[in-house]
Image (tube, rainbow, N blue to C red; front, side):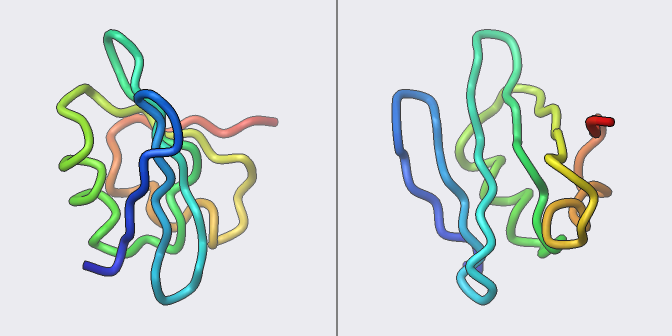
Length: 82
């Protein structure tokens, strides 16, 4: 698995691409989960997210550089700040 996961707080995880070192963060709420950034778009990211939560996932990008947003297509709902 290319994406390493680590629990960093209750219902909060860091997901790290082992090849590039790029991090994403997953926060679970009561009704949905929030994925902060989607990395370069490796196929292992959505699989890692599915292993961590069964909740619907909303992805947000901190900005649109490829190392933060190339994986947007794996997720149904993606939001980007101005």
